[in-house]
Image (tube, rainbow, N blue to C red):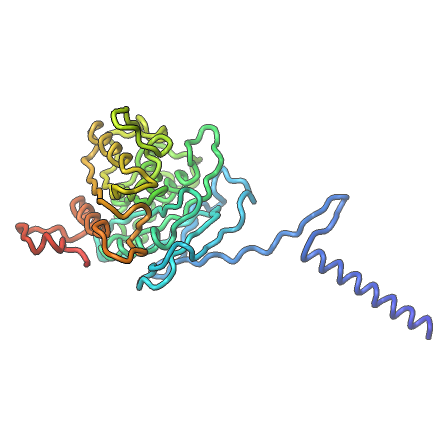
Length: 366
């Protein structure tokens, strides 16, 4: 009996030790061959796809994005911390997406327009993405005027500089790849492959300038047939573009102005047709950048651009979701619709003689 009791006690002790070891292995770390090995945490829950109508999001890089280092950044996060007023009814918090290493396109497809589509790059200083305010809600606007949209979740935060690649190379690679994918698959969605545009807000506006001036060759090795399609936007919509000027600062009055090194000498006559929307009181992206970029387009004989500068509203206004009062800049969707109508990307260009009532409504949703 003593021996049996001893054996049972010994077995219970060993069982507890084994269970403790297993628990430690699943929760912390273990040693093997003199080295401490840490168990990988469970994979993060994928962030939902916000497509409308419901459809899978499109992963840009089937085998992982180029020039990436595994584990360099934490898992992707989505946080409702960008102010109120987003969503179809304007009743949910606007959210940010942070730490993106798996770039995607979120499709918003409509079939009641000209077949035109646009890739949307939210802003966020190349640190995060203003996903609701400058992404999803903007896609809904474009859908409302018959333009399909693809919200680009590009890599953030900014990657370190790499030799042979331009500054902020990762978002540019993602933008080039995104346009190629939309253009190469256009027939699947009933879209016009020759009418794929690009728009971006703030840092996304910088990316709009980048893709508009760096489309002649890809900055990554060919992946598949999507990279055989041109990545030149059919039209470019610049929304308060950031960092068009050196150090993002205007020159003093009387000094010579120049574009930042990203664009100096790279704006040419093959630039896409463009529209710029910005406020004069923008303290984050100097409006002089938009003015100088426009002047450069005129100087090189590019298609004549459109520019709308409003008196107030600051930076990052998006679709005016967080505004308590109406400002003149909140009419920018009407200006963009007219621009797209003028260039055949949206329906509704008036055919009759202009009349005051029509001038007030512009055939646009109120």
